[in-house]
Length: 259
Image (cartoon, rainbow, N blue to C red; front, side, top):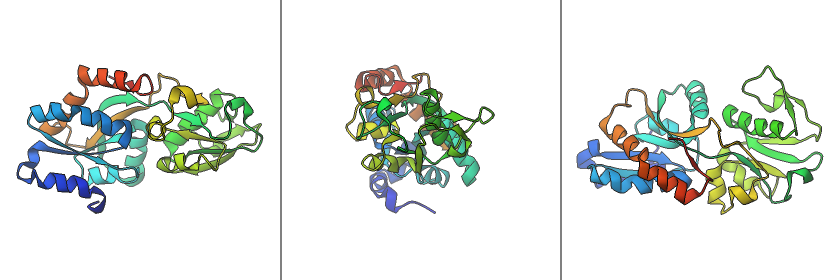
């Protein structure tokens, strides 16, 4: 199934360049920072003879399927553990072609200012997908709020062995979690959504993933498409020294280059 309705803006833009599809690159992205990074490299690609179409998609269920079926040439919104889980769960054949940046996952709240104020029975929103759910639980474990079965590599709430504060977990699709801040006590939110909310990782995070997180955000395309000249051009533009400097300057540590 082609996601035509959700890619309307991209396809309108593409129609202007339909005569040269080999030099048009359609990429599905999260708005911040992914779209901003690609907007920065767009002139670089134009200089190389490529027209970049940036399709902003906030629903995580869409970009991988749209990349698999050819609606998108590539996507840029996820990390490798999430991609691997999606490939397995949905029978996809997608591959990473570049590590671009790390967005530290953190816990945020509108109800408390310090994690020490978290009450017994507090509601905690985390992602329901295995990779990001595990990621959030490991942050809570490191903070001493829960303990997880030591024999489990990818943990779920069912693998919690100690929960002294009787935390109540609400599992949701990642893009929905920021909307729960009024309803839960703390929520695990990716940096891209934090920036969308106008919040600050440095000022507002109650708990934050280490800067050496293995969850780098990646550019993804279909298996077999890795050596397509336009995919190579996209990767070269993104992994340039200028782009690295842009990420450092623009996000001031809230988004960290991974190349």
